[in-house]
Image (cartoon, rainbow, N blue to C red; front, side):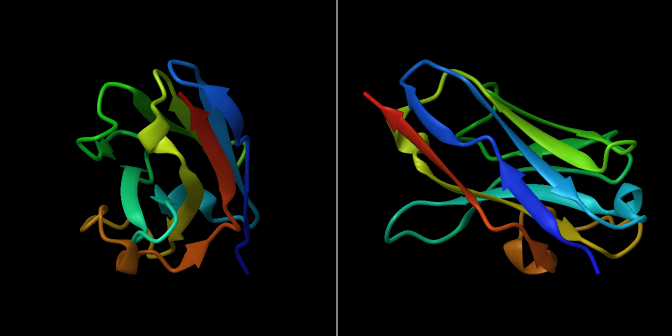
Length: 127
């Protein structure tokens, strides 16, 4: 059974950077599409970024494009989210998620396409 553990959140000033990590258990991580989502208080969970199983293609929400970078290290069963030029509106709980359909190709931005979730890590950006 796959488990995801998110880490790396914290408090940072506007303009600062953080790197989130998501460590996965299991032997088939390299075949999963992975995504990052976030949820601010009283708001819906929203898509942030996703990466294909191979790492060859990445997807971003318009609000983070050019500031955030998703990457993965299949040898370490880990996916990362490098967040630069952070803004107060980036404040949220960030969740990584996995789509366990092998070599999935589809709606990477749709949270309903992901079937395993991490516990979340809080990111707070002060102005």
